[in-house]
Image 1 (cartoon, rainbow, N blue to C red):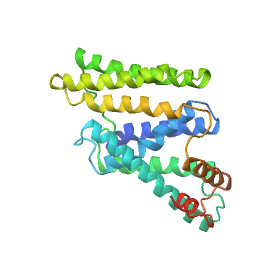
Image 2 (cartoon, helix red, strand yellow; image 1 turned 90 degrees about the vertical axis):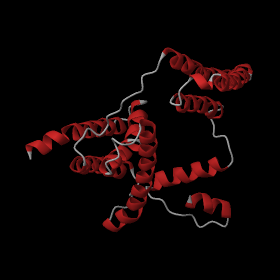
Image 3 (tube, rainbow, N blue to C red; image 1 turned 90 degrees about the horizontal axis):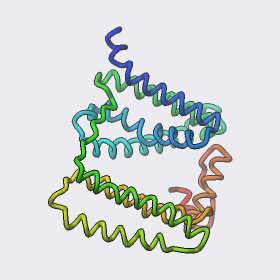
Image 4 (cartoon, rainbow, N blue to C red; image 1 turned 180 degrees about the vertical axis):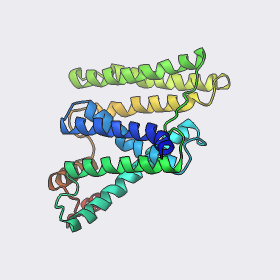
Length: 252
């Protein structure tokens, strides 16, 4: 028993600590910290524990491990919410998707996942060996990081001064950078491409995300209404509407 506790100590300690900090950040409504810790707990931790339960945490490469952990986490959240939405009312819980219900259920389930993963695999669950980059590889990552800064500043300039000069420069620089990568592709490793694609993708997405303080799009307005309605009622219920598009969005 002592050996088992010692073997599980790292996993349980890390999980319990993360859960406690996240719960405090949520209940105290601490800006920034609430979003960061909540994102880690919901989009990575469940999948990481599931990977460990399947004993894939050591055989899977780092990038594949991150992708699998994220996908499994989203699936876990979806089915957990669906379970709570339909089962908890049978237990006389009128608001199954309220903050208290969600926080308590997800916190206990994460600790339970960590405990079961300990029994399945005694190795450290979150061993991450970051690749060592040489000078050339580090230099290739500098422009994509600058692209994100240009996206922030360009969107701010567009909102305040209606000037899109920085955004135009951003897309020109991204195009030139992609051409450069094609030219020097034989002298760089494949491990650089995921980081480059991710950073460029973030810089392009932020151009629209930061374009306004209001919602931009078509379906997003109805989706936001459905989100607010679910949050206020504490339960997801499909709306009986004659609008087929609205019914489809609600089902999604």
